[in-house]
Length: 205
Image (cartoon, rainbow, N blue to C red; front, side, top):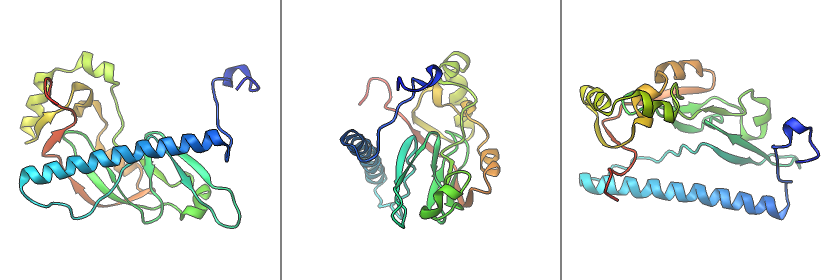
């Protein structure tokens, strides 16, 4: 945006209700639908491999995404871009995962209702995960694949696919992260990983 001060000219936006903005929103939502479809295929394949129908409920955990929030009383909708965050609207169910070897949590949002989203300090948001203490490149340089495998075996976790950039030591303590946002979400259950599949093993599809 050349009309902005020099230090802000790298920023840009699309005006609401323009064709460019509508095309962008459609493309973004298509990408989200594609991710959701991939998750459904993964869940189906796991169920088939185990020979059981394990689906009791489905919870989505979109993040790094922009949500359109409709508001009443002839107010324009707002778009909330949550980078590293996930919705935590009042009574909305969600997931905040840990790491390959630490607990994840099923949560219920404590935010405002959708029409009052701008009144909530977090804009009805919570962390989408534990957050990193090591960047991806740092992890590849500092961590040992052998040590990570031993760490996972010790905790009873079977690793089917996943790189050093997603190792447990890359992330913050998930319990501390949850405790720090007790005013944003209420935990109603927790789970521990037993099988991790984050990427295909090398040489396989």
